[in-house]
Length: 168
Figure 1 (cartoon, rainbow, N blue to C red):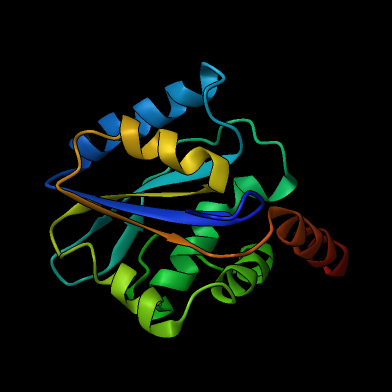
Figure 2 (cartoon, one colour):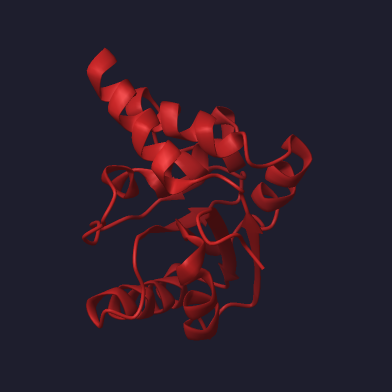
């Protein structure tokens, strides 16, 4: 079980983008219903050559300032820049990526990055640990899923984001 004040990353795989988007909508509905707190999510696809394409349509309301960039930051940790297609990791997102990376070994990051096979779609959710269980129960269409507690306090990520914005 994750610590009360920590962050998790959740990765689920799907045969296609449409199915992944269906679970993405369920996660958004949990937030709209008030059943989950702070999180960020993105649907991604991995093309036949292994490039990752982020297919995020919008961001939901978050409590902390960094939640709007958390899924992009997780992509920067899980996938080397050489495999990122449309998803750009730079500036503020890069700063948050570095902070998230501190909570996960390189081997585990690579394992999560390899979790989605070429030709598949994925759902990436980054959130406060208190929303992890609700998301795992609500996501029902995934072919496989995994989660990692990053042991990173969401408040520390807020501070990192504030520093990054000041330095811009």
